[in-house]
Figure 1 (cartoon, helix red, strand yellow):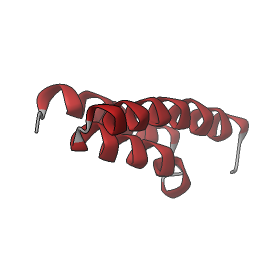
Figure 2 (cartoon, one colour):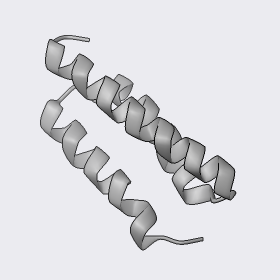
Figure 3 (cartoon, helix red, strand yellow):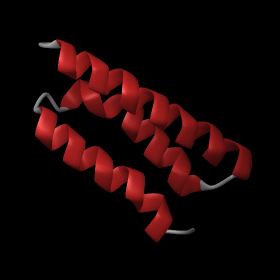
Length: 68
């Protein structure tokens, strides 16, 4: 991690991802489960804060539009 902002983004997105993961696991829904896992590992691969925020916003909205 290069800055404090990245660390905080990682904690926030990891928490949201954990919520999606637990919801997807309990409801046996694949889309929230995959989104949760992706949100938890995404901060490790994207170092730009704006790109991270944009990618995570798309991922958070994805289960609303894709229902499997």
